[in-house]
Length: 253
Image (tube, rainbow, N blue to C red; front, side):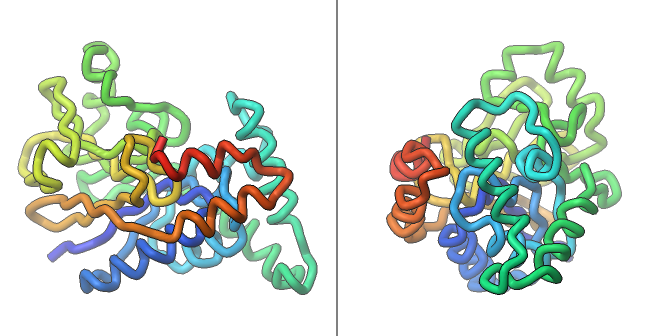
């Protein structure tokens, strides 16, 4: 029987990640998949990479990719944050764990796959068409051509992140937000795409972290409080991270 937690978009938010991992353990779940964007925006990239590296399945996110290569399509705030993230991950000092820890982190990020298939179930960061970079927003249900193309690449269920907005995309061009299904949605033969939400940068108006529990029969959306003021202070105290990256954590935007 499947019972796993699906997390995504941690964005170097250590307090959120620890709170979510504690909540997952409290549910009696030991299998965790991460759907990308471990780093970017937040103040603790090394610590978050070290925690996520222990998981059995981790997918490459666009910020993870940008930390290794030239960022594509990033705004100035995100560019500054990813430049600092790269510099932080390149630190070989004893305080950062030394050269071996540095190399281990880069090796881990460099080997991340763009997607993972479990039978007919797809796990990605972005979309079935572009697993790393393409966004699928709730309003895309009005773009029939796009949605038909995406669903044409979904065999059964597709789990993804990237937009930081949790919910279920149905093949009939409907988006179901967690609060509209009492935070549970049945898994049947219906083809669906599920956005699991964001651990470290929620953006749908709820400042709590969000993740999904997947079983054989259903998915459950979980909301988790965390010590966001500690994360916000770390961001404020870092001259390379814009204060708005902390401000948005209070509003979940």
